[in-house]
Image (cartoon, rainbow, N blue to C red; front, side, top):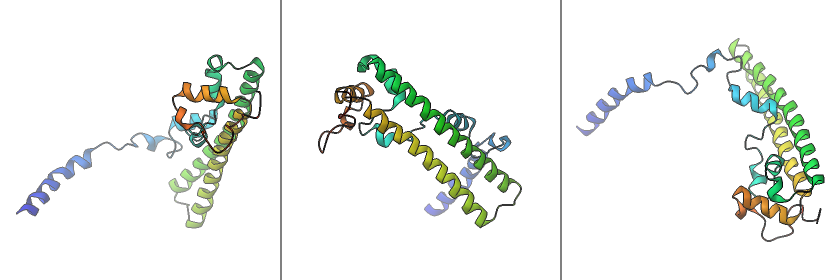
Length: 183
């Protein structure tokens, strides 16, 4: 009797599932269905998109937030100028790679749309996209390394405190990132 009640409840729920809007509604009209307009804009602008959290949350500052917090961190004019250059270089490099990801995603989408994709072709395309995404992440993470080298230990500690993740700063096991520079 109980299983019949469960089956009946599921039968009634199916129409609700069938009528639920897809989280991808509207994407089928997009030239690249796998990437939202926001994702494409982020890729082209070289934005971080959370790709450098391994660095950020472990005490390696990023240039965008260093620029925002320059006064509170007591950056020198030389440090601020170097950080601005670092940010610009990172955005260009990541944006160039982002444009390539978008083109590869467009080609993948087209291959599926026109039904020309093969298993071998799929493997090549997804490997290429994954490699580009890895390169973008590398650009962002390396920028955090370069940023830390521009700062002193006190500035890095201030950054972590101001960003609200002071627990992510290195406590033991060696010097703080960048502590060998700009003392």
